[in-house]
Length: 251
Image (cartoon, rainbow, N blue to C red; front, side, top):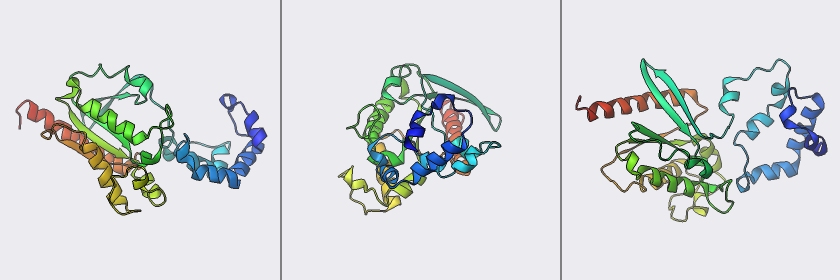
């Protein structure tokens, strides 16, 4: 099975053959592979691997059409600068997505003078993971340092800052077996306590803000939960509008 999968030219696959599906399923059920999966924090593996591998029969069907969840769980790193204009209740927002990887930052860090708001995404589940670029640096420590850099940049001093603490569903699962104190010794809360872990991580980021007059607006999110995101974006829209009205002395 392993040899068959190894020989597949992934970029050329259009249809999953029955033999390939059976080989993948057999590998996924292998105890060694499962042990590797349990140790996934030690290397770079998509959070959605289990989701797709456990539903392979459906995905391999000739009539397969991706569901909303199938699409939402796809992970494609952002490279460069991508702009998404969208209408939210008759108000046009321009959202600019930028790559957070180290190699991407130099492309955008100077391009955002006078932006209205910054939405900074934190992956709550990455407290025990390492960077793809450097396998001895903690992802959350790197994220925290980047957050401080951004909110203290002169270009962003007048921009509102909205913190999305994402992947709350994965944190709920992971905190039961991967203890926060093992990676952040300053954590003094109980083990296996999701709320304590969430509050601690939120404070880690809030503490990066040197300007105590500047409010950091925060939301705990799950990007694959459409209702949660709909609610959060309604709140974000209201926040941005209120701040703009205040800036022009209209409230």
